[in-house]
Amino acid sequence: MIADLFEQALGRAAALPTDAPAERIDRAVHDVVQLMREHLEMDVAFVSHLHGGRRYFVTVDTRAGAEVIATGGSAPADESFCQRVIDGRLPQSIQDVRLLPGAAELPRTPFSIGSHLSTPVVLGDGSVYGTMCCFSFEAARPLVDRDLKRLRMAAELTARLIDQRHRV
Image (cartoon, rainbow, N blue to C red; front, side, top):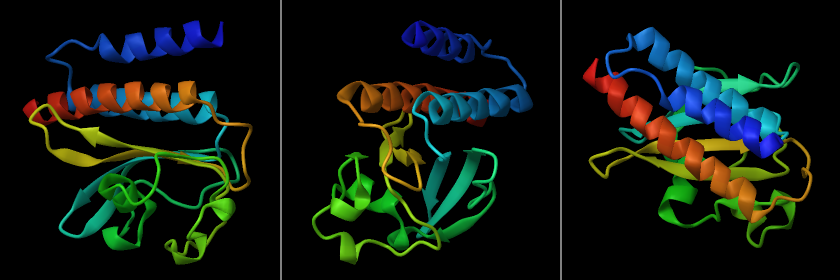
């Protein structure tokens, strides 16, 4: 049943007309990010854009009380998990960051990261826009392959929406 609701929600976002206004596309991206955070039971989910050595938070959704990052914020890309996922230095699915070999060398954050899921957002021209990520402050319920597959589906849909947004 949850899988059906997930696919229905993604289907609604994918069904936007090609001439949809930018605001409606932006709302659809936010809806996908929120859906992923809720579906994966994470504290924070976001889409980042990596550009000019920085990571920009394009769309952010957080659980109430978990507002540790915000849309519009940015930080150096080389100090992010996002860049390391894109470079292949970090796996896309991490059940417990603290147990990861090399955890001491990970970028420092002003908050705890327990579980972390991230996948590149690749645009239609093949360029990497950034990532779709979600994390929890504590290690979450066991992450399974299906969780990462759904995040990848959501990232693909988000990439199509971003491509559509750039055409508007």
